[in-house]
Image 1 (cartoon, one colour):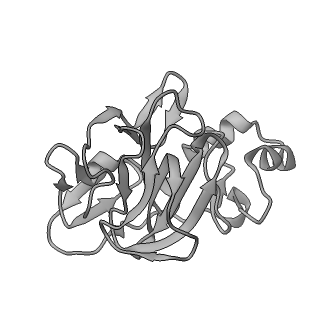
Image 2: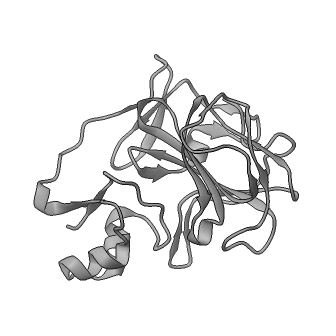
Length: 205
């Protein structure tokens, strides 16, 4: 693992609800044009300006893990580019909905966000363990293997979710099914500016 900022990894805003809004990642203090590197080997899935995220990069890693790097001043990589852990991918900034220079950093597993500090110790600049087990109720660290896995959960029926297609938005999904946007956000633990991916499942019940 290579942490996303080379010079500093001070967390200035944690994961979780801020007032009535879900903060789906953590904010890491940065100076303008600090070097941002990929945490792991992977392939760039998104590299563009996206709503409140500003200039954002999404990198897909092995076993369904993705990392998100937002508010960048400059994007250096391109979509479908293969990157290595520690490789420079962009420069820190304050694009999008940001009041100061910082990196908004997210970790996602099968499109579901989780607290990056469960996986990475930002003080020691290292992984907590080589394996992270994800459960619906909570997440815990295990030390016996090297794969990122998810414990089995009950699979919802097809009527319980919407599969994202090209052009879909959360507002359009809300109107289509007659479900309040607030309820969709709560069910999926996302905010209205969440990055949607084709094939992603959005819970409706």
